[in-house]
Length: 348
Ligand code: C5P
Image (cartoon, rainbow, N blue to C red):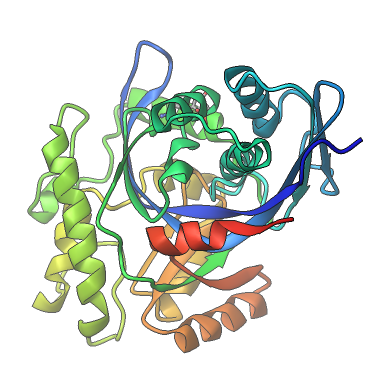
């Protein structure tokens, strides 16, 4: 028998506007510096609580585990205990986001499940309790408790809201390749052990962020991202686009972007993922050629994104990618208010 009304929520994806991998930590994780940005692409999550006990997960996508290894299971189990709630939780996941795509799908699903559960039970954890639970389940979860533009430090779980970037048209390319994040980190370690330093951004005239770099430099990164994105649409280059890769001979119009690149807006994962999957580098090039003023791998991939000046330009880029056989969708970045406004689908 139904004890409570179900809740249906949107579980939005994220992209990483730059990702810097720092030192190996004693706990086995890596120190990270990144700017997360939520986007409009989403899964749909439905939660209800009925009589009984335990957690039941339904998802038509066979790649999504429905057992205790699912991030949703892990957070729901903890949340039921923390809320001292009784009942059987039934969770349905309508999967639209890629699995292992670097868009934070599984992490976002877990946070959406937590918030939906709270709504169903009409009981709430405190903000710090929510953040703590989320961080326990995975490094990429807490960002989804904030939404919008977020600075991520520590192992990525320590999150700070940044001034929101203006809503920006983007294209998300989702090549059918699953990249394992732990393996990508291990490959990074192997690359560092071979003594190959990351691309020498310092030689472009600026200083790359270091793991030892104080957090005020990271805050500076956030401010610069904001200022860059707000200004980028007005900046025209001879080729009509800006790329995230510094190249010689560029004009002063790109100064802001280059400042950002020097400060660490590149995604370090590209250095280990692109050599293994050269087709992903090609996708980045297609995005750039299609007019993206910034294109990058998201997280450890395999999703890539491009930021565009208009919806029309993004739509054109989608067609171009699809013509090349790459699945792609036009989307938009979500500010914090947009994220939370869109979160709720219904509560009957
Ligand atoms: O926290 P999460 O479950 O997403 O991490 C998955 C794996 O990715 C970790 O077990 C670790 O191997 C790696 N990782 C890391 N450094 C981070 C985040 C994740 O090494 N900052």
